[in-house]
Length: 355
Image (cartoon, rainbow, N blue to C red; front, side, top):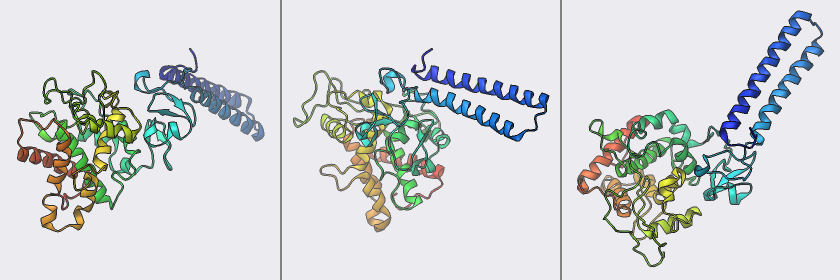
């Protein structure tokens, strides 16, 4: 088995190193007891040697975990890159900002004061608000429905690193409400419509083909020439639709989504990034971004605030052609607000002036 093999060999070698070191420690302990060594220098030297052996064994495994061809990403099974290296959006390991920073990076990215544990950055304000266990409870059916767990916690947290203003602006209550509103809108668009507990079925749909017009490729803007045979139908948490949205999102994220629109339905990190890009960006003819509307809601009068959530809903659903035909606008907004209230309750924050 090669040290450079993907994750399985990495885990096996780590286990072997740990097992071997444990045996050495047991033998050393027996030896010390049998000989009744009282020389503390000898004991200290032995312990230090064993500790160094353990560190070197484990370190060797981690240092050489990168595949020989330096490929990474979901098509390769998400193998790790070497120490100090990152997996780029083009699925190769490397170092430097073109691999490791912002929209160029897929995982093991550079973030201020952020190291990763199990693929999830530490010291991140979003992870402090939404833990993995809470996320799994919020979207408790996502692994049982059509999406089959596509919208993972790790993918969401990784995607937030490309948008440092998301859920980090304002006080804790404001940040929680932004998360609740984002989750509510994306849950409404991807809902599984469960027969019971209707607001617990978010993140069940990836492609919006069921609700899009048959045969329509949504190549609607000449400014973004469409790739042959590609369709720009609703995909991902925000159900990104139309070639111009794919083009603009891809440009912002450093991914060619005109040539590869299916990435939004294949790569969960890219999928979440498109949703966050849409949320954080002011679009033509819209009064503000969803993020700005939410952040400014608490400073408005009651009359101004009354339409804030509806304004967000119109921005989001103006993008998507997956506005479910079985729901009228009022029903859609009502259902989305139901999600929002559920998530606010789970985040232990009041609904605020947004609704």
